[in-house]
Length: 408
Picture 1 (cartoon, rainbow, N blue to C red):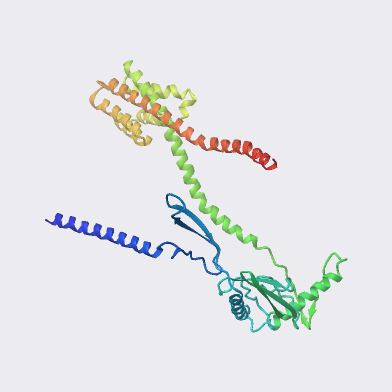
Picture 2: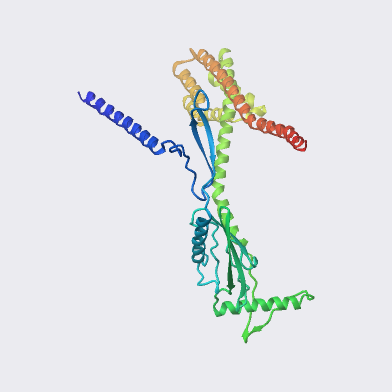
């Protein structure tokens, strides 16, 4: 009964979602209506919103309705409307362009020269009478302006469709407000420039010992790049443990790779000696003594076998020595081999050859599978260089062809 009620609730929710989807589709259809078409008329965009394209279906041109795309330009002002719009935009400019300045007769900070009015369809272009003093974007460059100021002007060209109006604004740019110390520093810098001009023939620029009755002293500003080196040292100190850890992981992976590569040969040698009737301990000893005469004896698996051999010679029980050998190697295959050797000691030599032969077959199969995986990984790593080479070849071939098409 509860399960049936739960299914009914789910069905109600699904029905509600379906109803809401249909209602939303109906609302969207009603809002869209017939697009901009109403009573054989197409509504164009208002002033300043650009042209648009309306798609309509026309009946009567042929046997079936035809779909047409009609391009509509934006609505344009008539003369009276344009004059009124330009007047409203001019009033807005007079209020907005001042920015933080009190008036155009006392301009000390940047002006706000907008490029579009809030009046629809009215665009504004600015021309500065002195671009080195007032840039067209309104930036005021008055750092070196004299105290009495500089008179200049701005011209705003307002356009509303085909109608335009130009307005000239007289502007007086004054120096930015400075404290007495700032004024003294600016005057002293101007003095230094004059002294530099007078001493151009000298190797050194001699700085004044006093200025306006004040004794002066100087010191050079040192480059602060040296402050970066402690951070570099700290960063390197942080990276060293990560680097050591990475190298240790690489050594561990290389050790495992070597040991797995040597595992089939070790099991094979034990199988051969066991088949010849040698006890496991004698077979172990023969392998260790043989590899000591060969550079392969330096490999990790044979080092562990040598360590096990020496431990058994020092009196460590054979069972314990094999168990410790498997733990030191740390790989599942070597633990399995140690388990086989331990079972041989506990149960006798019966079945040891069969167990070693099965393990040898499994080891060689694993070696072949590992070789296949390594080959696939190598081929995958080669894909990126191959793609890069293909891209270079395509570029070398296609670029001259494109240039030849352009010349033709």
